[in-house]
Length: 61
Image (cartoon, rainbow, N blue to C red; front, top):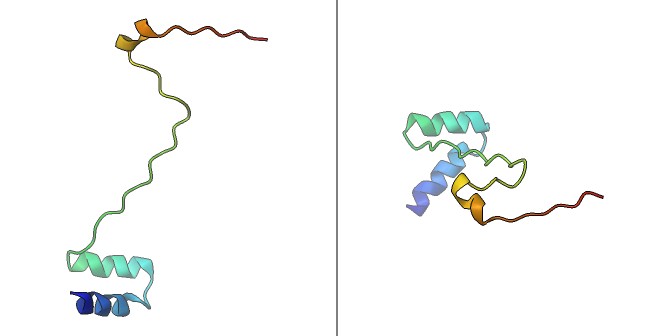
């Protein structure tokens, strides 16, 4: 298996990323890329069932 993988790497070494993706897709070896998780804009709020246990005080100065 190592030799076969080495041959594939050598064959794809001189082509662009798009061409490599197309070649791998043509033989059924392409795997969709995982997208990076989106950065959240803040801390998620707790669900309604857990709010009765939360006590919070804020003093604005």
